Image 1 (spheres, rainbow, N blue to C red):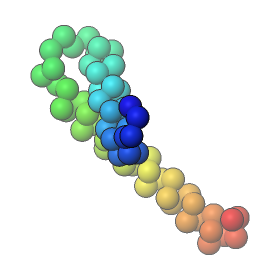
Image 2 (cartoon, one colour; image 1 turned 90 degrees about the vertical axis):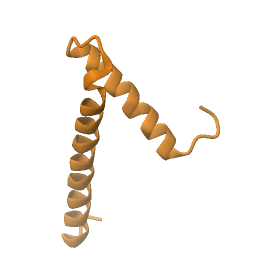
Image 3 (cartoon, one colour; image 1 turned 120 degrees about the vertical axis):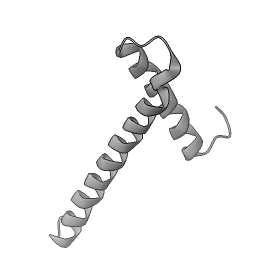
Length: 64
């Protein structure tokens, strides 16, 4: 884990989350792993966009 950049750490975390979600859904094979990983990445991107929107609104409203 040493000497990893933030993107490497993010990818590692998303992989671990996908593994856990695979288990949570009761799936025993990696058949759905890529689909789950795509779903997680999409949700993260939506969250990231929402955070940017909130920050932008705060700047324009003088909250920051």
